[in-house]
Image (tube, rainbow, N blue to C red; front, side, top):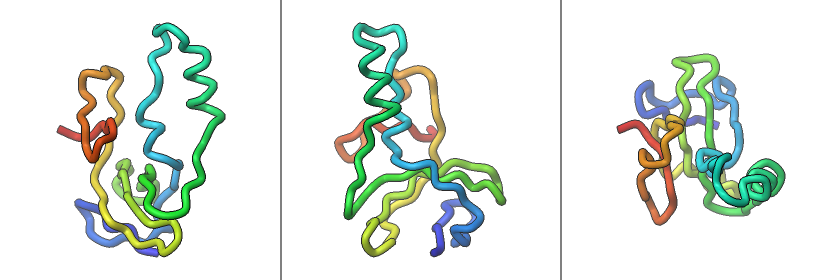
Amino acid sequence: MLIPHPLLGPRDAQEFFCLGSASLLGRPDGRAEGAQAAFHDYVYLRDNPAGVHRELWFHEQGDRSWLVVTRNTLTHEKRRHRPACRRADARDQRRVDGRAEIHVA
């Protein structure tokens, strides 16, 4: 499987490590009301979708960048890919495709 890296072009998937769902970028605020329940859901409750899904991929054997790859889990077709970075400040989040997403400005 080839991962379309936005800076380096198509790269073999063996160069990457898949962390899982890109929803992990939306870490709950530890100081907010109900933080314990929010962290429980964040850590333990995961969707296992069949179809289009956004995932975090780490280019471990390359430029060590994080990518958000949108792919179909049934066909492995890659639909979208972009660099991703994690920012602690929730004000840096932007709405993309109706979901909160953090990305390089």
